[in-house]
Image (cartoon, rainbow, N blue to C red; front, side):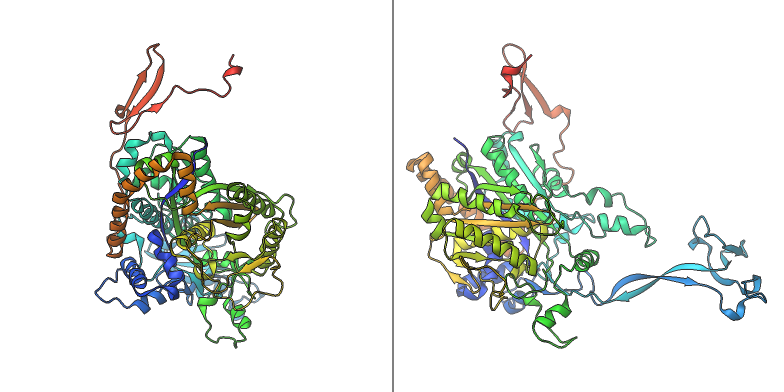
Length: 635
């Protein structure tokens, strides 16, 4: 039987706060929480923001989350340094009698010798060469003049004010996305309530997969951004900037510094669909039996001036001036940054965000054996390209296919009625005019073909913005929270659906909406990546997952699992409380447990051929007695 990939833990950090135990989700639906739930939310935000006290200011903590005006802890959007080209030539009164620069009409300026380049520009000559300061004489000088400008976009989905992952471990000038990886993956693993050593003792080293990365790479000063800027800014390139800028580095960090993992690893790069591409890798490993545990995630930190500029010149971002125009405000008037992203409403562009999201999957047998938390399951992730395109950024046919396949997969497991009446779509919902038209057309067409009326549509980017590679991770965290707490987060930045949005068969949830416990069986997570990278996941609710596990393993096995889970759930809750106190229990093991050749022990069968390898003493051995699927073709 095909193993079922069960969600047993999740975590991370986004503009909504800490992801584990649905704390970030609670921020989305804060207005619907009871007093006790609100206190838990405030405590979790205080723990993130290093603002713990007996009575933390809850209103301030809440204001310092979600989409808001850019804060200066990253950079000052009102004073961005730029370089202007400047050509200096002699003034006309300095010219010689023939109207040409002569010796007396040359440009002359004095500079420290150490600031001069090794090779002087053409036409430059030095005077007083023996001194520490020299005079340069030249006919013209090409200079770059440092000046400052204001950014046109000043809204973003930022991590909660006061949260800095660099202070939680020995970050050693790591790029921000890697700092967020260390926090996000630690949060997910700690949420399990199971010591990692216990998992490692049950699972062979090659049966654990890690798929994690981003789509932009590490573009801040500690990564690729600093490397590419260094020479133009007169700085030196460091030995870390190139390797730490690589896109797969989040997976490398998890393997090398958090888990000591020896299993399958890597990342898929698929623009805004990257999380779902990695999720597909993880579930395929589990379904094939190649892995029993898969850690899947993304960590994107794109809030740099250069990335803002790059997206904005494409016309993709919600500029301040366009937001004012939407709301009928005068130029320069204050506007509400909270409403910068308006999926499926009258809008003008997406809102850039940062986020790190991770999920831990196990095969169903291992999840029951360990007594793991059963938070849901992922049956399928479908991926299709767009085919021929007029524009690499334009929509295509691929997303029709992925949504249709995901709906068909849900129908095959749950039946026609469940798909039509008990499903929900977490839309990509970027907040751009093009997306609202193209994605609504796709969802409406699929709903019509499958006989769905009033298909509920949610769009979490209204709250947290577009975190690019991590965006579907944000959607998954919102979905898990919905199943735990029963409220569908509304698209509350939108007052009405735009007139060009297709909605004959759709129900856009514009206000927070309560749903009865167990009334939503399946969620479709949809991503439309730049370049035609389309993906849609079929995610099954925890109550459906429990029924499927009971059908496969029997009631006795489920009762035994429930008994084992009591201890696991208590340990999970203990971590949640600790994190809210500011004790985040970061997993980071630099230069610890490094394995060499002496740690490997090869085993042989009675016939003498090598059949296994043991790595250390506390892990199951790796099987080398492999059965080839091409044995009948052996020569």
